[in-house]
Amino acid sequence: MSRNGSRALCVWLFESVLICSCGVAAIWIRFGPETGAVLNGGRGWLKVLLSMVVIQSSFYIFDLYDFGRVRRGVTIYIRLCQAIGLASVALALIFYAIPEMTVGRGVFLVTMLLMLTVMTWWRLGVRWLLGHPRLAERVLILGTGKTAVDVAREALERQEVGYKIVGFVGEDPLLVGRSLINPTVVGVTCDLEDIVRRHSPDRIVVAVNDRRGRLPLADLLTLKLRDDIPVEECASFYERLTGKISTEMTRPSSLIFSQGSRGLRLYRRARRLIDVIAAVVGLILSLPLMLLTAIAIRLESKGPVLYLQERVGVRGRNFRIVKFRSMVVDAEKNGPVWAEQSDRRVTRVGRIIRKLRIDELPQFLNVLRGDMSFIGPRPERPVFVNQLERESEYYSQRHLVKPGLTGWAQIRYPYGASVEDAIQKLQYDLYYIKNQSPILDAMILFETMRIVLFGRGAR
Image (cartoon, rainbow, N blue to C red):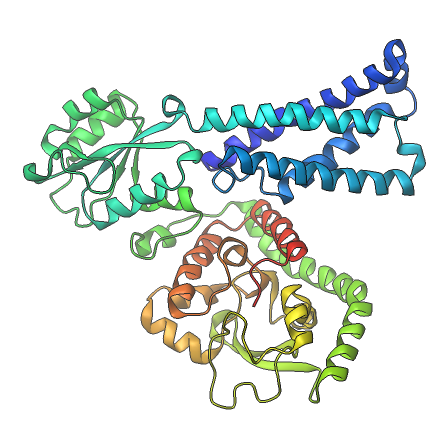
């Protein structure tokens, strides 16, 4: 688990206790000496746990467990108000539908007021703790080139994750004391042990491009074994930090020798059964919505309701993806182009269904046919694949797994409309291919539901 994920889990666990405590305190304020009877009888603890699940789900929807995204104190307070407001509405609907789950008159209001007060102060304290330099892991970067600067820049942009760059170590004595971005070059490689004593790093990240004869291997081995300082390649550090694989830093061997557990191999074999069951359920549940969408498309403009388009699938085999038509007929009469922001080719109905991802519901049929999976890299068109494979030697690796309805790149990067965007999304796709697991798939599904709910990133 990444450092950010570990911190989010710790915060989540502590907040579970805080939320339950607020619920119990509200019951005590309302019922006084009868608190024990209320909790132990009439499903009292179950009601408190239900409130906890709803409230924390609302916190997740409003990014309150993404410490890199929610930084300012004012933003934290606004997000808390929004999250507690949404949780209040959700709980009110649950209490209306299931009256026996109501704790008692006044308890609901008192709980929410306590929650807003306690969580505001708690979250401000968490923000201060996560940003405190003394609690951050001190990282020394071995290297002064572009790779070293890129790693440092990513860490500086994510200070809430808990890393502090203490400096760079290079080979040129003339660079000592010079600032590359913010940290300075603190010394040369031949003085590595002395540098470590002076700056006390918790981790050394090796970011030297050409390593033949340039790494102080003896010093690094001594520091690792004697002082127990972790020494890590820049590619793996970058991967944990950003959730993507840099095509510039990584080497083919890191992908070749990455191993999956036996449980993961079993999971991959069971994916087809899971995909079929989920696609059948998805088709049944979405059928009324798809019928309404088909009628709306037919009423607005002439032309077919469904749109078939050639895409590249697993092992480079082409297939036809099925979508609701969201653009005017003959939208690409002048040749294929990337979708743009506020694309004029998109119809009024198309703008709505693309925003809500309804246009992709017919792709359940592609999943049933075996062309696609629920989770994987989004399939791209052959004309763009040929162009992108010339730009990146790793692009063809996306086709090692089935394309998906949603994926790691879709939830981590906004809609791509250029070659540069596609290369950025490739880095997230490679991360998923290397690290795919049931837990990562569950994260992608939850995040996808949140994105669909708020209509983020569509064009």
